Image 1 (cartoon, rainbow, N blue to C red):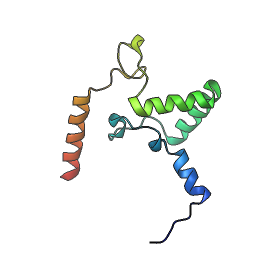
Image 2: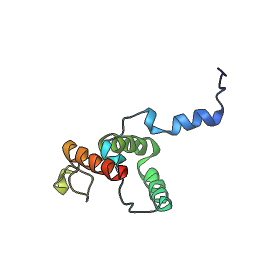
Image 3: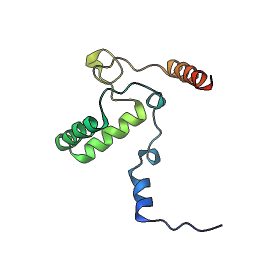
Length: 105
């Protein structure tokens, strides 16, 4: 078996990937409509990084990936502000089964 020599790009690809730091919330892995373009998302998050600081922004991103978003009790739900409550685990499983069934047909 040939031994793979790690390059700087290989290491960077692992370091930048949050998959190696947290388990993603299943709800974030479901197919969904996008609300903004990638370019808009990047520009908005560059501004947010400036406001929050890079370290705090990164911790918040990891929290969102793990939990689906910070809770916001002021909005009357468990989900991110303005988006209402997150679906329950049972609802997410049902959504996943429906999507798997659609994909297999």
